Length: 361
Length: 161
Image 1 (cartoon, helix red, strand yellow):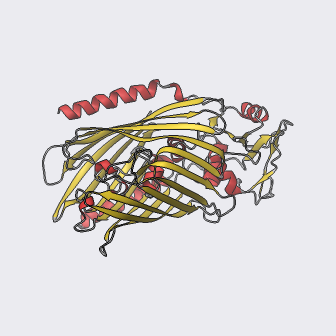
Image 2 (cartoon, one colour):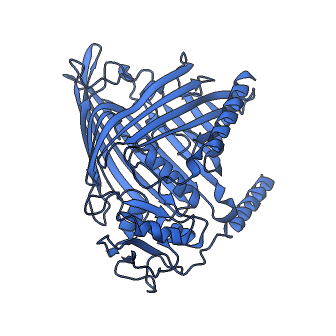
Image 3 (cartoon, chains in turn brown, red):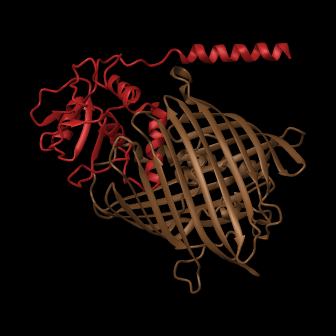
């Protein structure tokens, strides 16, 4: 009962804070410097269908601050505090009860829509889910983050963060084309090691991203991303080559998203190649009229880790699906419930009924 | 099993029936306004959508676009969502939460509850853009044409069908 009590207390505090916040008043027209503080929070409860008690699965608070310093310069910082409950269902590793991570911290120079430069710790954009939702579960439709978008420190395989420089922009025109290129520090000797840009002896990484959202098909977007880096793992150096393709269609209440990611690690001087693949498909629909507060969804999530790769030895295969409903209680509070069946370690599968309360404040 | 299937069918029929009572816009069209000081006179529907989604944040002169919107429960707000943004009010609100969270924009659009105040705000903001239900008789603002068509044109993009 204690975790549930703690969760309820958190819900009460956050609800009160959201109600008391004067942010519902319209923001003024742009005056510089403009600062903004915000946060997202969520709590997940689960109940195994095989029996047992309702358990607290985990909770997180995502705090962010942005500063528009001048017309062209801005800064952004985001930190994520997670608390793991029932660890095997949580994103957190077994030993970790609390986890505090700096998600993003960068300065941006944005003289036009065609060019935006960011320098600092940023999201790589190699997985579009992470680029779009970042870490907020409030903004995403389902309860779960797909396996390919799991954070490095939560058993995720892909390099979602890096320290470096990222240039992005959109190309004017009806094609809705956008690009991004970046250089920075590759991953460190551990899978979840985000190397500081100015550490001696780092290996470089490069990124690119292209996408289009044509006027001819309102709501459609497709893109591809690539990442190349060199990993200095214990005992060997590996070349990393990742490629991702994604597509989405979001219009009139319909939300369809899909993404496929491939990661190849090749030890230098060896013929062997370790290939890890993952994909997800999300379909959801928001009805019109009185039921517009509801959004039923279905998520398929798959991850196949390269057999025998030591660098990803603590990343697990996944083969899961979940079906549920998101209920937007108001602009700041969403409740989600779903049925999920997942594979934590072959051949064991489990099914869960879960509920999530998520906030924006 | 048959009982379950019947229950599922009933639930689906209920969902469809309830969702058919949509909030249909009742205004004829939405007029998009900019300040008379803004040289823009025509815009594509695609670029207008990108502006109100924050994907385009600058005018051609490099100035940041200042967005004003009417409340989404007004007739013009619903028509704006239905014909331009193609999202529900809930999704539009969450879109802007996400845009700020992504670090791409400093603020969500300013919501103007009163039509006269909207016209005054756009007129007084050279980099502003907003919308109202009916073309205003005000010299301080210009009504943009969309792909060469004025709000009275039956082919105008932001017109109720």
